[in-house]
Image (cartoon, rainbow over all chains, first blue to last red; front, side, top):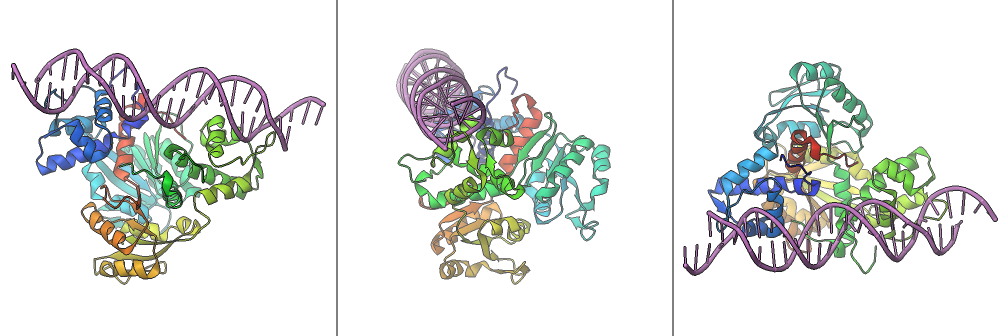
Length: 216
Length: 216
DNA sequence: TAGATTGTTAATCGATTAACAATC
DNA sequence: TAGATTGTTAATCGATTAACAATC
């Protein structure tokens, strides 16, 4: 977390999975877990798991393993899940609504303050208790409310425009579902969810089964 | 494509991006492209791009580069995008509807034949011209229509149950949006879209900017 | 204490980058 | 032909796995 050397992206992308399994274990009342058991659950090797965790500190105890609750909380902190994030969603179509409706994100600390759209037919609607507002109001809304994360669920030809508004509003991170790479200043964190790329990979593996290895 | 050695997963996951940029170039009327230009667009190195493509054959021409249309079509074939796939969606909530509504997938050859749900309030609805049916009918529907791809957009506690029905129906690939790892026989291809893992990575980078490198 | 399992170093493996001869 | 750019080999870099001493 506060190491001198960077932690590699491949490590970081495994953390949420550890966190997910640890949460499940905690809910089941399991108090203790070894790297070998975690390996059986996640599909990563025990050695890799120990290496990954030791990027952030020695959370385990020789001869015992890891305390489930403690490790989960530590990972939560590392992932920044001990905070509340204010988010807005640009695009109130099905995908935007799906995200606004999804309880799991709110439970993890990601609050949707508002959706925005330019279609008058959806402006004014409420998804759960979140209002859909005119996208014209978005930049000011972000500024006034200190929104940190912007979520892009508009069609690809509008994605850059939305990203520009986010940046002007002072957003720090963008979760982008549009199948386009957006250009933003270096200090803005962009996480892309390119669903077409995922689907095309599935299609590749269907046709080239020999290249497929179950990864989890 | 039909090499002796496997093509590595990291290579395969880059292909859809090449395909996407090549499609854009084609639509713009660009006929020719060098690995260096593709590098500028995608963020991968020119060397890596040439290495990646040469896993599947020599598509380029020394001193010239690559023919955009030809390379795009070759990649399309490699990815299996020259075929039509029959799919069904289990879960007719916002996310399932978003996918059923998304024209991009249909254009790429992924036809949604039906959605399934167990909520009587949505059974009978039509998303575009695709009907929502009772999930009880799903297994037979898959068999009768030769459905190859099953898409899971149900809550996580129903994901395994849906996967089991898919397998019994004879589905070959599963696109899983539920935040759970499903267990299926080895010969079934599973592509997971774990949105929480993506969001948590964004959250990590927001809090640990020094570890962030723009990847595309 | 004996057994178990971590933390960590060293060895291996694989992926990326660099370099350049081949050739269009 | 001269210039450009690929295809491919070799070098480097980074990630994973193996091994084991430390220690609970």
